Length: 512
Image: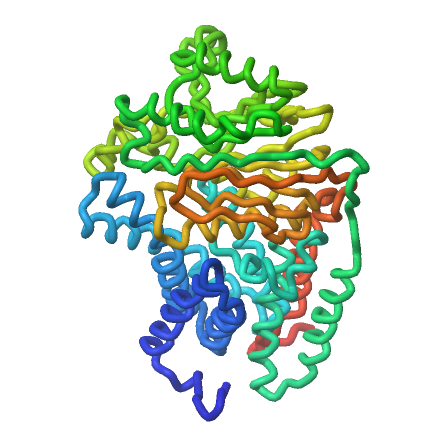
């Protein structure tokens, strides 16, 4: 293969490994807050081109280099939480991120090996393998569903596929276009036809409307951003000051339909501040408001029955015409529980004494929606919104969605912006407004098209207000989930494997 005279087939493996390492590292700049979406095409295109006519073992190496670059740069926002709040030295923090990149990079390594070992070289096999391995990241080893190609197009042309096929459908189209363009450089111009077809399909998809607003009065909502520093949040001396800050910010908001506090805005067990909770609930009821609050919920009765501590990251809704408790289902490794905690005390010593750092329990599925003014409110707490199917299940039957978070762990990094971008994709996939209340940002209102209609600045204590309409109807993705794009990918791979080139053994002996 030749790209402008540059013969990739003649390149040494070391040079190609460097190219794929850089291609993986550049991908994260396609995502928020940078938004260079075209890098989400260039990055997989480089890997696809470099795999041309390489052996399966060589493909493994090239794919691993790509994955290492992808995860070391793309997940480097974890450095702040590991170093600043995990009380870990800089060298060890960088080493841990490097180890993460080595492990997560195996997804790209194995997918590249599978591609070269079992399938012909074509976008119609490379693309579905890419998508299936993106999907694997949502559940294998509890999952780390980050850095998907589709997120780069949350507000770009290909986003019209999101209500039909979800983020994996957007990823599929983007990777297919990227690799088909590589084929055009090989002067295989017939690939221009399917490229035009999927681009035309995006235009057609943009004309489809799956959901409609209800005739009900929109919900007047106030999102409270307390801006509590992470290094003070869990200190016992600062806990009641945190309550004072949120109470003061909310004082002018009572009387609106919903006053929403972010994740763990009550930084202690609800049993230890029950009089405060009762007081605020009664005040909300008297002023005609609902109060949503993130808290550490200790289920006393269930704990006694199970003879173990059951502590949940929860969102409680109370007040006027409002009720419900949602318990977070997907917990954050090293954030809400410590895998192999006994072996890792020397690595993350500060988290061992952090109530948010371990010992949390996962809520069961399914859970009923919270209710407010006879409307159903779906919930995704923090990290959960990164899981497309979990959020989809929580959104089914809802009128609006809310997600609460505390991204103070990652202040000053790309992490909170990538997290917000995921919420935008979830809004598009499910056709629902999202109210996103956070401790330090990014607090925002996002409409059913995934567009940010109101956004608060980061690292400031403030209130963000907006009216939120209820919606009815279901998108195709809401009804069918990831099944259509996964099934289509499997079909392409079955066809690719069946029609792959086969070597012919001409040395056989004829038999009579």
